[in-house]
Amino acid sequence: MLQVRMLLRIPTVLRSQELIDKAFSRASRIEEPYFPDKIERIRKEVQDRISTIESISRSFLDRLVKKFPSINNLHPFYSSLIDLMFDIDQYKISLSKIDRTSQMIEQISGEHIRRLKAAKTVEDANRIMRSYYGRFASLVHEIDQDLLFLGKCRDYMKKIPDIDVNLRTYIIAGMPNVGKSSLLAALTTKKPEIAPYPFTTKSVIIGIAEHGYERIQFIDTPGILDRDFDEMNQIEKNAVLALRHIKGTVIFLFDYSDQSLYDPEMQEHLYQQIREHINPDIIRVQTKMDISREKREKIAISVNSEGGLDPLKAIIFGRADDDVRR
Ligand SMILES: Nc1nc2c(ncn2[C@@H]2O[C@H](COP(=O)(O)OP(=O)(O)OP(=O)(O)O)[C@@H](O)[C@H]2O)c(=O)[nH]1
Image (cartoon, rainbow, N blue to C red; front, side, top):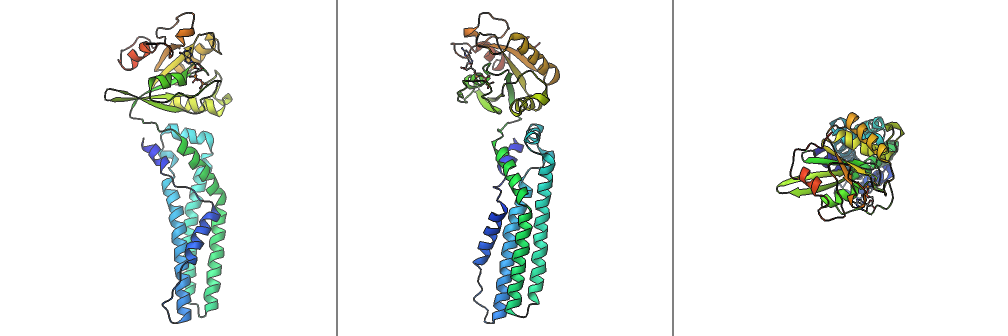
């Protein structure tokens, strides 16, 4: 939970030009009407402008460095998802460049303010101001690609679902179109998604069921084909990472109906792969009983018929210690 909150608090990432415009526009509003002596007035004005630009830009950059989570502190499910989508080394490099730029802004601001103190004429002061604006803008432009990259990371991270690692959790898995999303919808408060064709679940989806005082978490994963991890597409990899890193019991759905897109052997093989290599805590469940010719598994359900989920609910909510895990 903590990790997700961290992700949600990451501030909007401005592009360089936006940051420069923001700082310059705030600085341009500064005027010092109270100094009778012109050079003193201009000196004070330029100094205040430099300090304003420094403080606006540095507070933004420092906040980014502070609020972007350190990959090492994230729950492995999140760090592996981020790793799947982005280059983790680039993530670290971009954050450290931003940190360094903030320090350099502090340094050039100090230097220019010192030079300003020695300025004798209004022209000198204005020249120092122009030099500062130029140096500042080029420093910020240098991190434009880093800001762009981190902005994309942020947008992605905000979409990662909010998994509560403290709740009892079931992860619904199986081949495409077996009825995973329908089961999630039937067991929880999550509205069903329209899923007319395979691979419709693109990322991990969470639903919660309230049972007495307990909140039970269900995680719907994208359908997986039975192939090596390296051959999988990003969507299937999402499912495998959820299965690998989220602690919980897997509900593996078998579809033996005529509607099934995959034959029983393929489904069995995928089941065995998950049980042996990813998570041994796994329950076999046959779905779509209302349109299946025969019952092949001990737990057989249907989301479409009255009481069709009872055999599974007895296990989950009744906590019946089952002999169904093989
Ligand atoms: N008759 C019947 N149809 C079902 C049942 N469960 C799911 N379906 C249908 O099967 C189709 C696929 O269901 P989904 O829940 O989208 O399957 P999924 O496994 O989440 O699919 P992907 O996300 O694409 O892997 C839909 O048309 C559902 O309406 C069931 O118990 N009985």
